Image 1 (tube, helix red, strand yellow):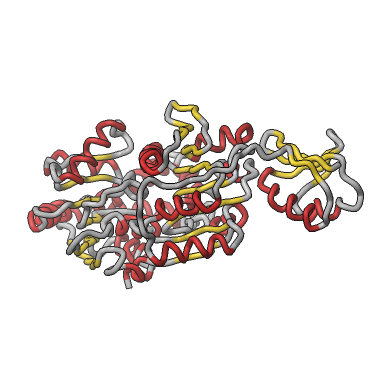
Image 2 (cartoon, rainbow, N blue to C red):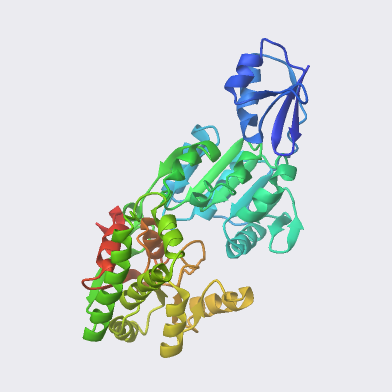
Length: 456
């Protein structure tokens, strides 16, 4: 009889006949002469089982080691219509697919609905330790069952386990048969060369990808079709705003550089652009940035050109006019909860020191970060300034005003920052300010990151 075995992140198919060989090839298997058996990434488990069942080929499944669960939440809650639609679409796709919903739209609750529908051992993977702890808290509150943790100093795999992407790909070759359902939160991170192994080394037949913005700058989002399944449901911010999310408006404010800043900006930018032109570099093309870094490291002139690149960005992103306008906006919104976003930590600390605003960066200790977020949501700290660590995942339901002083040209980043202030509240009207240095490259960056229907 055909035997299925799990072996270090792969699926072994033993004792096969010539008749089933074509089916196994079509299911992603190759013949491994070392063990005289067919082998495939564990990801192919679902395809192999379906192929064998369709061929009515008897087999013994010793690969899967996950259990059935009867999950009933302690919390009584009625899903929004779009959450039920998303669940139905995922189940109609046979429990495989990616769901795209805006920040604040209840992706975590949708995941719980999926867990209860799939009714089997589940691994939830998140990109950060903060998110891992947040999911652990939600699931521990919802279910009368011990929740396992993998990562952050914990190695406690349970029937329901929460982990980070880093820990998942490290441990999956040993634990990849322990879970029947994989949930990848912020799944746009998954297509990376290391993180994708978290999906490839698991045999879980049920998979759910969750994100607000699947698009990646490297264009690799197409790999999600294989890792979590194709997009089965999508709703955008403007479709849910006003009813399921807060009403919002976006305001773009332009600030002029001072004469001294303008002169310095033009000088530094000319030096940097001259170096780029002389070496015929195309920074917007694949590999262009890596080539620029390589060329600037080879000479004193190159190192000066890189410094000029950094200087012109710093002048535009943290000009005196921007900081003065920030002070005026904070005064205007002194009764609100305001998140201030920048592109770099140096500007975060500068703002924090000058305006006495609590700051959160990747360097902020976990306990301190927790206390600051708790104080922000309770109103003890009406303002927070951060760079990128609050772009995704962290729950700040009290926030209703966002001020983007600087950022990248990433559409995802800009949508994520808008999403941070959209959690629905009674009478809540959210506002996102974007402050741009006039007649600088920031204007082009601003246009790039606003190419989303939420800003139309």
